[in-house]
Length: 518
Ligand code: NOJ
Image 1 (cartoon, rainbow, N blue to C red):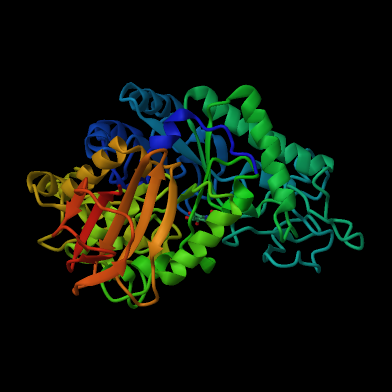
Image 2 (cartoon, rainbow, N blue to C red):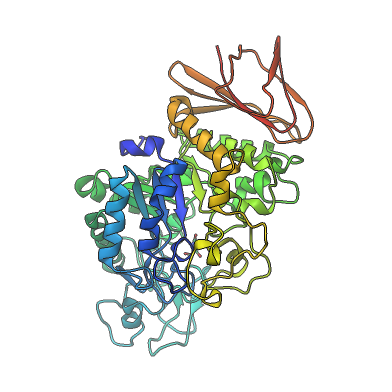
């Protein structure tokens, strides 16, 4: 597998994920906006993040928080205009930062004009833009469908919620008995892909630096081993190499052996499926809560790492808009150890807005915009002690999602004022990552100790001559493991430093350290 030529900034990129609805409201309508983000860029830079991932910000009926696009070429008016978004790109670049937009190529909203045209009985330019069977009585297998909604005699495949019809990129091996299954090389699928390239061209031309790609592995249907979808993304990569060679591509795919072949620079570790990510953070006994198991995660990670030829480009997020807040299951000082992990692993770290101050999952909320149980992780950012925690000056009932009302809710202001806060630990960890090549995104990793139900977790990060041993012990007990190299004084230490006795390293409860190895 060839390593895709990466834009240089990706090697030390540390992302901050912004859910635009909830970050900062500058015009008192209760919902975040582009100007609000611009106003808070210095806060993000100050934390140490140098890149942004912005959740979808395009026109949408918001049945899935914007992952149901109704116009790919237009910013959602609730956030501002295309011109405002361009100003955001410029403000980001003026600070030496970069920004990825969220591209949703797999489906649109039912309100997209392509879909409305496609649903018509008469043939037109959009008839093949989506996957339709040729009889209302036949459903496409596997994905669910939209049926009986128009005069067109067919059922349309959906890709996620039932109001998100699947765009047609074709089938890897169409079933000849099902004439409606088109091949990737048919005109309809080819036109869909060309249009999606136009979308990318449009936003890259306006100044964004690349894309986080939603459900990137879902495009070509009946493509179990991903070969068709890989080919499709290689085609996109060729287009980018020709026209936007510095565009960065990060996939929500969860199979780096496939996504990297498809020309993505990095892939996400997913919180569902076989990854064991949530053994660490969100299960009955998460490893970072102090009584769990990291060994299954390490096995999975190593297997992916080997399959992708040790490229180490799996991004591990602190959380995101789809899962519970980290602070729901990891408490107190253990959060600092969890971040020592997140900020010492390969792949670009992604910090979900508010996780740096320990924002809580807001319990008991009614679903907002297709959030369901995800809604509690999407509440407005808590900046300070002013009205609505400084998020918005709108009346409280107008806020996009109700905020955490606890009197001791964390705020950015308080976190910044407290030298011992999680916020400051993260800042310190970022500075250390940025000054040690061995800790950066593309440097190697080798696990040293990750035994079933045991602590600590230990791994070596290395680049050239530099080798750092990372040792994490979130448990409340002292723990030891065998190690043969010689450890020098820690470049990062939380809690007490490890003690080395011949070939055994012993670490104190609730501690983390990065040690140069001689
Ligand atoms: C993954 C996104 O992260 C999620 O929020 C969305 O609902 C689905 N893809 C569908 O686009």
